[in-house]
Picture: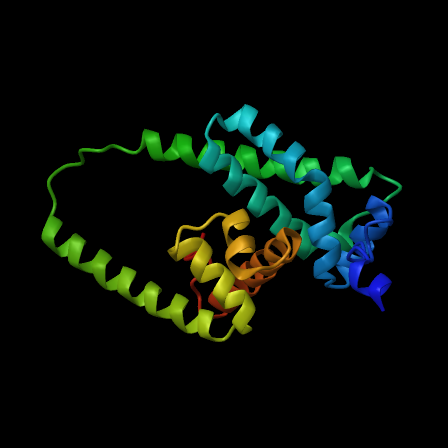
Length: 200
């Protein structure tokens, strides 16, 4: 009995698998496999994004979006064309380039446009924003409780994934999987409402 009580916790059941095998599991909606891939490549992915974007928050966004893409498109991975590492980092690079273009576009937008009925435009924006907030809240309510909790604490509470893991007393890989999966499902729900892109 003493031996059982003092035994170390079991290792992840997918930790021994190859990168390609993990992607195959991700294609079958295995969250643990996604968490393991993030553990393996998250740091490299962030380094790649950070070198291009030179901004911590944008780099984190690029990595988050890239791993969401891994979750959604793992079934398209072809081992004969590229290694899992190359495929994942290619997705990271694409998201990084997308963010660079998005930021460049924002900077290029004229800050001072010709005077228009600003009050009317502002009111329309506020109405649209209120509608989007209600839609996001409704979509959040349709998520499993653990995914909703992770997203609300992460995005609205401002907690990092490490802080979430400590607060919820869960492994970091579990928190990462919950956020990736929850965000993917949330975006799908918003897309069904015609509001894709209304949540980070």
